[in-house]
Image (tube, rainbow, N blue to C red; front, side):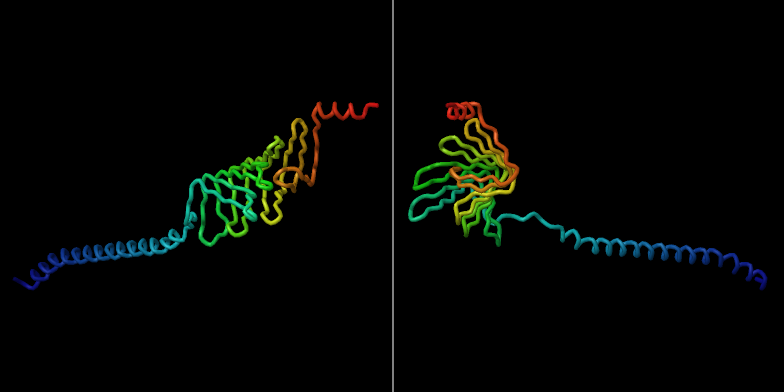
Length: 212
C-alpha cells in the first residue's frame, strides 16, 4: 500500500470515531443537565417543606365533658346552677368553653330566673361566666331580657353588657344599649339610647289613676 493510500484509509476511518466522540460528549452533557435539574427540584422541595410544617394546626382541647354541671353555693345555700351540653378544657387556660348554656339562679335557696344561651365560657377559678348567642333571661313571674351577650360577675352577682337589650314585662318593653342588672331583674339599668313602649293596659291604668 502506497503512502497516499494509507492517508486516504486513515481519513475514512477517523470520521466515525470523531462522530462517536461528539455523540458521547452530547450524552454526558445532557446527563449532567439532568442531574442539575434533579438537584434543583430536591432543593426546592427541601426549601418548601418547613413552611408546610409551620402551618398552624387548630388547637385541640385536652379535656371534653358532656352534660357538664357547675354549682355555686354560699354557706351551703345554692346560688346558681350552670348546665352545658358540652364543656371543652384547653391547656393553660382557666376559662372553659361551653356549648349551649342553661343557668338557673336562686335567692335564699329559692329559684327565681333562668339564663339560656348558645355558647359561653366559665372561669374555673373565679366562677365568672360570659355567654353569647341568643341570650335570654326569664324570671319566675314572666319578665324577660333578650340580648346577644352577657357577663356574669360571681363577685357582686350582677349581669352586664355593652350591647343592645330588650326588656319586656307583659306589654311594656324597654330597649337600649348597655346594661347592669341583677339576675332576678328586680334591679335593671339600661345605659344609653333608652326607649320605652307602654302597653294599652298600663296606659289605661295610668289614666284611671290620674282621673279625678
